[in-house]
Image (cartoon, rainbow, N blue to C red):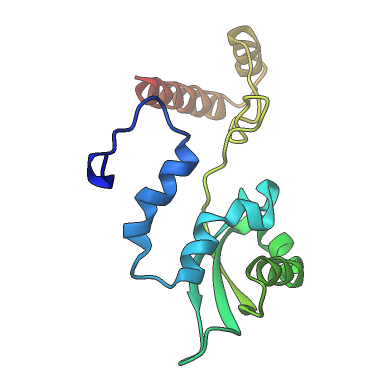
Length: 165
């Protein structure tokens, strides 16, 4: 059976399929840049990979080493990434086996939080029952604030309900 007639049967791991899907999109980028994007979690670990991602890899003209890696980082995590810069450079260079990266530039952006292993979302800071919410509103002394909070709560609930459907 030729390669063109090869039939896939059964479910495949998404990680294996990702490489085939991403290759055409990454062809216009360098091999090093594509490798960093595809293997980012392997290179720096899941903890840091949730806080940042590689955007671009720029090499000096005519060279394939001593490049600058542009990393998009969440503003809250930028200090951690900045202090880990030399460690990141070492990890990336040891992954490639040569001095591919000489420096890192950080670009502050908003990175959506991912669900943690226990199924909770970082964006949800606390869950209150309806009784606790009602009690909190009743205890407010400022009526303008109380009315504003009730309007905000109803607007928020409507938005969350529309996202669920």
